Amino acid sequence: MAWVESEIIRRHDWAPGLMTLGLDVVPAPYVPGQFVNLGLDSGGSRIKRSYSVASAAGELGEFYLTEVTGGGLTPELFQLHVGDRVWIDDRALGFFTLDYVPPARYLWLLATGTGLGPFIAMLRSPNVWQRFERIVLVHGVRQVAHLGYAEELATLVQARGGQFAYVPIVSRDTPPIGVQTGRLPALLDSGELERAAGLGLGPEGTHVLMCGNPAMIGDVQAVLERRDMHKHRPRKPGHISFESYW
Image (cartoon, rainbow, N blue to C red; front, side, top):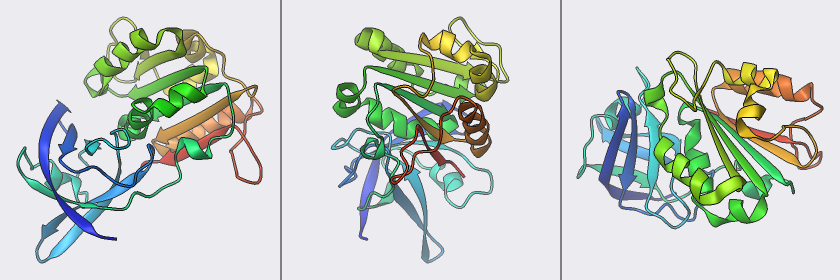
């Protein structure tokens, strides 16, 4: 492990406590879906935490962050501005990548909150479009303002035609046209999610990647298990892979 000092070259605030930071360093070597450590020096020591990378492989580092009250690092990160310095670990870690997804025709990406970050990285890379016939991204948040990257994703829907569907969900807000309301697991269980995506979700030719709230992951997994879809393991191939945030 070696620390590299980087400069913040871009900051975009989506809503209070929700932002994207862009750095002048390329995380390397890096596969979309992996995470790296960011660090700040304070009181004679370096505080570090792991964050998924939202940028495509080979691009400057980008991170989609939510401020955690009382957290070890995010409150300090949210005090920073363009031109400030951040340490970044030169090693990328984690197995939540397409390399560990078995062959499939359809890929469902289910995220809550900043669990969207690794999926943005995947969608910005060519591999995912070459591997799968159809891709559905579902993003569940509390309020419309928390639907980060919504404009980029809507543009991707137009660019990719019928290959890509984007289904935004809010649970505590009045949704505009095209945004679903409710909890992701309940919308999946009722069939509303599949109707919005225009694609059924079952074991034939499908893999599901989930990232975000552990409660969402557990509830969705229960729904999928009733559809005969199970966790993927190297020695026992399945249909579900996930990474919890916190």
